[in-house]
Length: 139
Ligand SMILES: [Zn+2]
Ligand SMILES: [Zn+2]
Image (tube, rainbow, N blue to C red; front, side):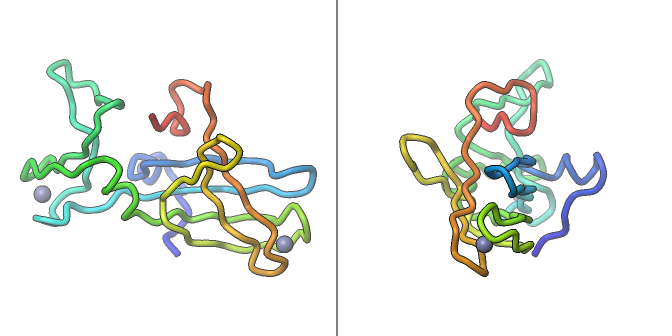
């Protein structure tokens, strides 16, 4: 498992971070680290910056700031690991899951789905639609 982020610096290395409550009893912390450039390994891949220096969050590719290697967003994200630290809403088991950073449509909502290691209940992290300006806002 990749370490849970504890500082602002760590948070900046993530493509995704969220804390959720699951049902009445459960909860989850989810984090996904960015990866080094597969080509030069010198830098973390990130969304490109525009001329104004702002990150283009809607960009459909990730680029390496060192060698400008570009990777398509979906392919890149699906190669990342989602870490989920959870308390199961069904059996209250506490555990950690690693799943691919790959969302499935479940009841029409993009969802990262893991399963409780103890009782196999679904641990569903649904995409939030309307939060702006947070790490959750991964459009
Ligand atoms: Zn590179
Ligand atoms: Zn469980």
